[in-house]
Length: 309
Image 1 (spheres, rainbow, N blue to C red):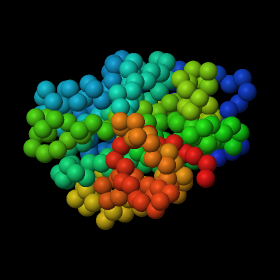
Image 2 (cartoon, helix red, strand yellow):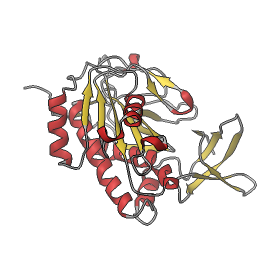
Image 3 (spheres, one colour):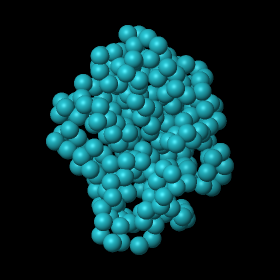
């Protein structure tokens, strides 16, 4: 029987276990007709345009550019997915690459009628959508503020700044220029999930993949689960006018965020370093950090590392 649409999970530990000698395999290709059918089942008619391309540099770069050039052609909740993304983008201009057919790479355009100063929640809501989708696969995933999704395996060694956690997915939100807003603010949420890479193909020691965690999943089904979760969270966020606290979303993000309550080192843009304890999230999704002198800092951007108490 084909593996397409099926999930196999190793349950020997919380996030699965790397099997000695295991080698990842290229996932089934993302086919436009399959993606549209899966999204239709998962989300119904609540999406805009759905496009799947065989190869691109960055789905987010492409979607931002296309929606800027022709806003009417890319309505609210349009989805652009790529079978292979050659130059994924991270925060602070970082780039990353994956072998062909080994990752889920997609971007979603959102045109919410909420104040733009509340858009800081979008990366966190995108990350929570991935966490929920992975939970349905039996993977115990958590958020790392502001835009990483991590898993922890019982048999992994401690890694400086990460502990036993490893990054399996990342989320990046791009605010579109006003000319592309089409009557209101808009953003593109880019999502990348490592699916079938074996350990030796992962770019850094802090990364992992679903395959290394013992999970085999079809990328089309995973995309449908992630998008369905994102739409459900987005519905609630919009219904509250972008008030994540009032919608109960801030509490759900906090519950899934492993950063909170831990000693952290924050490397801020410009090079400044802050040591303290992450105590919570502000109303706009920023990280609150209490330093050793009892002063609270509100962090809007920065690299956060876990440190020992």
